[in-house]
Amino acid sequence: MKECSVCRRLQIIPGCLDDYKQLAHYHYRDSRLGPFERIFALKPVGGTINTRAVGVIVYSMPVPGLELRNVATDNFFAGFDRSTQLALINKNIRCISRVIIEPRFRGLGLASRLVRQTMPKMNVPIIEAMAVMGLVNPFFEKAGMTAYTAKLPVRCILLIEAFSIVGIEDRELFDAEKVQRKLAELGGAQAEFIERQINSFLQSYGCRRNMQTGPKRMRYILSKLTARPVYYIWFNETISNFRFQI
Image 1: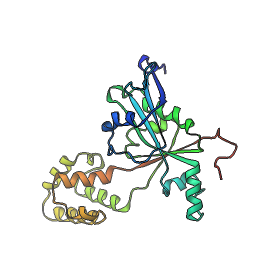
Image 2: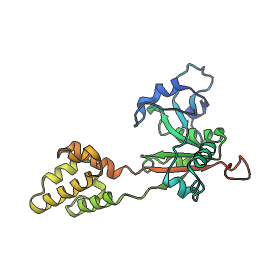
Image 3: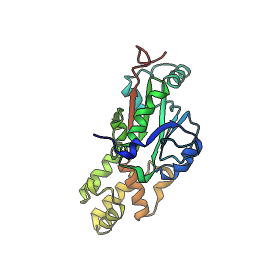
Image 4: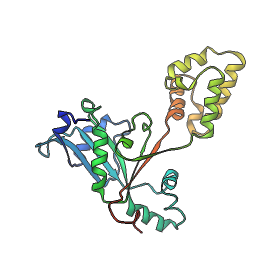
């Protein structure tokens, strides 16, 4: 595929916290950014350090324990004492914690370009990422990362099956208002059944277990049913003949 003229006029350069702050409000997560390792910015060719970025990627230190990391690495980091495990993880892994593209420049493949071209610059054997929207917008995979999807918790499977029993199918679970309207039309045994299932489901979510019936509660429930984080991993095989550094 031929690169568009807009993309040719953009370059990836070392960025700073100000570049992130300029675009942070476009990200679906909280804009507050914790400790980070490096930031790269996507800016017009020939621009200055003060030129506004159209894209940004943030790399951070990895979190200590991820089940899907063990799956992807064949338990390489498991089985050590905690101190050794943390030292191995911190030496070998960096995590992509944010990728943001200014809305006017979306749909041009710039997110995958940011990921693909900056991962080798981190000089570690492994780059990883977690993305709630990974199944909807798989730009990490387009950049060369491998995806691992977590299993759906049993409580989610049971509630999805309960919704199906009362006539609400999987494809409708992205519209809280529609689901709430259909539930409001139920009566008798069906209404009592689904309310018991919802209450049982909410027991796993602390103070949310006492939420009042309505669209707000349904939006929260569906966010838990449909948000399946995807774990992504990329191995930098060019660093050495060994996959990991011990």
